[in-house]
Length: 71
Image 1 (cartoon, rainbow, N blue to C red):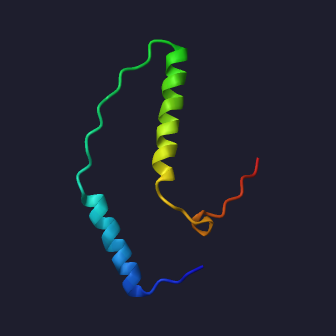
Image 2 (image 1 turned 90 degrees about the vertical axis):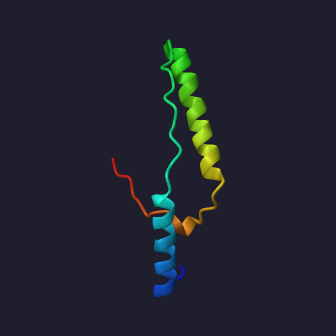
């Protein structure tokens, strides 16, 4: 686990604030599928697209939150 200095932390926070302040491109509303099969295909396609977008960014295992799922 690496430790951040105050300057590194300030730089990281200011960078994230700048990125959040950028205007986002408006998303176009998509038409609702006509039946359940089309809805399932659209959901799977969206899930696949989201996974591809997330794969573009490296994430170390140490960055993952320590969670315990208990039934």
